[in-house]
Amino acid sequence: MEGRKSLCFVWVLISPGRIRSCRAWSLAILLGLTVQVAFGAFLINVDVSQTERELKHFWKSTGYCPPLPHRKADLFDLSKDQIINLAYISSVPHNGIEQIRIHWLLELIQVREANGTLHYNFTNLDNFMDLLWENKLRPGFELMGSPSGYFTDFEDKRQVIQWKDLVTQLAERYIERYGLKHVSKWNFETWNEPDHHDFDNVSMTVNGFLNYYDACSEGLRQASSQLKFGGPGDSFHPFPKSPMCWSLLCHCHNGTNFFTGETGVRLDYIAMHKKGAGRSLYILEQETEALGQIQKLFPTFTSVPVYNDEADPLVGWSVPQLWRADVTYAAMVAKVIAQHQNLLLARANNTVNYTLLSNDNAFLSYHPYHFTQRTLTARFQMNNTKPPHVQMVRKPVLTVMGLLALLGTANHSSCFLFARGKAGEAFVVAAAAIYSPIAGVTAAYLGLAGAEWRRGQDCI
Image (cartoon, rainbow, N blue to C red; front, side, top):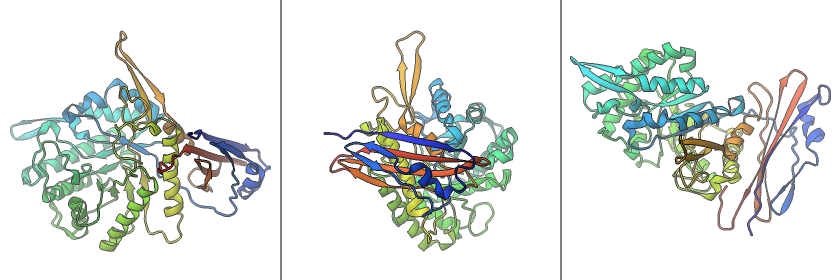
């Protein structure tokens, strides 16, 4: 017999004068709050007098990859379906999702060579950046792709210099278009997962990747020293595996900059990908192992911000999984966030500058797996109607991103509770926060996520 799944979030507004201190919150509001999950009842008592922590919303990001062929990425990125999908994503209240990290963005650029000079057509990329701007989203801007297939070898000095010029043109273009204040918030990043060798027509050796990195770094710096750049956005398997990952850190630590000849290259953040393999805590365990090795080998990088910008519970976005269709997936996302807050960020001896956790789930699902793929929405394509049209349905995991956005605000007292109970074959995860959006009024939020569990699995 399978357990019943449930997901609920409760919010309460407390009138002025009713509570003088947020420390009384649990006694005044939450005493006796009971939630029925599966075969049992859970009594949730939140006593914020015991713990008061800073809660930064480090999870406000998603991402996707356009399908093959990448050279036609514009047909996907600018499609009506994706426009609707982005509207749903941007509808998360309180800017609950701010960044969308996209692969192969530079495939949206066309280039032609005339009299030894490269002339770029940014029209498709402009249109896509405008789309994000209109939806109040920022790109996780991977400098990934080869415009019109022109760039093929980053051991070719001429191409390395041309790449730097392209990056400078691109950055200056969007600074002029949207302003430096906005573009300086973008996370510019290296080619995605270089150790996986998904470069299409580009020949990328380890040395070529380091040349490419320097070209990106100096190209951005020429446009503005305020632009952020990091990487490598890959697995960071234990050394000596993942050679491009570890070579990049060595290069940034004491390598020679291709353009300046200086020792060491800037690394504004370290991006890694650690996924759960079906067990949520495995994400944090892998991160801890990799970061321990990084801090041991490169102690000067200890304070560098760390991103896990593909922290999904399971590899393979398109592989259908029944639990991705219901609140189980939403509960898993909430649980991973809670684990990072409580087991890492809240530790008194924490030395990790953990800044971003992103799920890679802004893909578009397809028939017949409308709900069961790793997506925020379920897409239904009515191809036999005239004219054909598409409908999107918000999945519970998108709803939970909005509910997580209610967990406190910047510069206000917040706490985050992670509790796990068991009744029969069900687990419950609770998150709580408090803040004062209006003077004299305290808002209290309690979130509860229940998810099915089967013997022999640790699905959340």
